[in-house]
Length: 612
Image 1 (cartoon, rainbow, N blue to C red):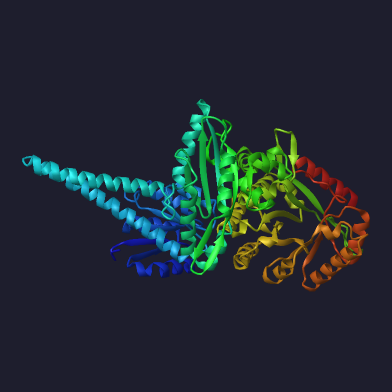
Image 2 (spheres, rainbow, N blue to C red; image 1 turned 30 degrees about the vertical axis):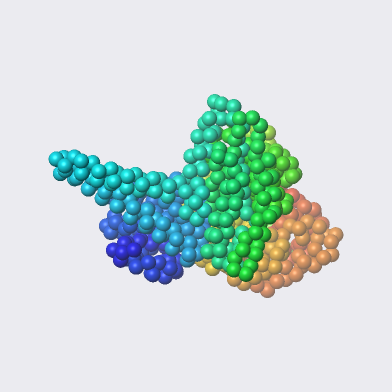
């Protein structure tokens, strides 16, 4: 590579830029860095780099918007862009906005160099192809008088140009590690096949193959060994397929086979053939030998499926159930629904949640948090509530509780969208009914720890408060799923920013895991919600009573406010009061209701009357 080759690195985190610069310094390229989307757009337009490595999550303009704007400008539209992301669900969106490739976080040096070289080679070939075209046009004009010689030379050069065009087409539709079709080619093939199925009788199946224990090889022997394993796996499985079967690598350790025939469905039979073959498959690397297994999902391609995304979501759901049950097996779409002990419709949570987000099928509910005043306190009432989320199932005319859809939403990485919905629904409600907010001591909103991994989520929250002009001091964020906090530094930064802004934080479900205690010292929670599993029967279970008592004593020593969840009987409420707990939440005090002005106003008037 020439030192004239320019690579633009874009990331709002300087440490990430340092890592990428260190990896690429031996490529003898000129590295340009930008720490924001706006700066990236400026440098790309002015310096016209040969390649851009673009971070997805940035506070001013995210990577997808930067890519869209670059592809819309004539001067920068042909610059290849490699997205750098830690989220697998960013990959398909990156390709949709014009990305050429992706690099996953945590960053692997060998993967970065390989993908960068691949794109630079492709760019060099494109430039060379353009040069050949210009030369051909010139030669046609200059050598008209030497037809025989010119024709021979032109034929040679045309053949070379055709080779380059074929090579470029190959690079655009194939995975460079396994030489199989890539995700783009698979999407095109499946989309065309689904169109045929709408008008013809075609028996087709989509097989998703997930290699079990691939990470053992990749992490114990290195990524070079991992790539070699993928190549050998691809070559081995290719030998089992017919000419009509379409074999592709989805990415990572996942592959797909689309198989069809005139009569019958050979999807399950082919899956069994692959599984049987893998029992004898051995991978040798230096002095180590590894055996492989795979989980295979089979999804029939029927007329009810109208898009590639729908097929892929269905296969993802089946693979997830397969790995929950037992690795190394074959699961069909129907089998997965039965073995997961769910209703048949529940296997398709992905499309249900996506549709719910777009169709505004979510509803805001609320539950009051009751205050237990001590004897010497004035009788002035204190009102707090927690805003809850429900999903309206129009087909079955019922309200779906969070216990059913929160788990799938987290698994499918859709939980940030749900968190943004409940935040905006809450702020919009109290913006319209400021008289009710004035009567409230505090309003609590749940946020998943998955959301705080997004670097721009804190800014989203502060912008929402600014949009509605509401006081942040009135709001408390309850952080759920504490086991999901894998980056304590990121969580600390997120919470400190919002605490400085004026918001409160409560640690939800406290006591359910050892990590909860560590978080109290590392993160700036000012309220503790005791896990309802200990509260609901503390009047009859001595061990649970002891657990609640110890949590209360510890909270007092740390000067943390305590709220008890699942207070369902007056006996439990009295026990909590005796221990010094002043806030309780549960069916004993209030059952959740739809969040409307009428329902909340009526409840506040009723409580005010009881205090007078």
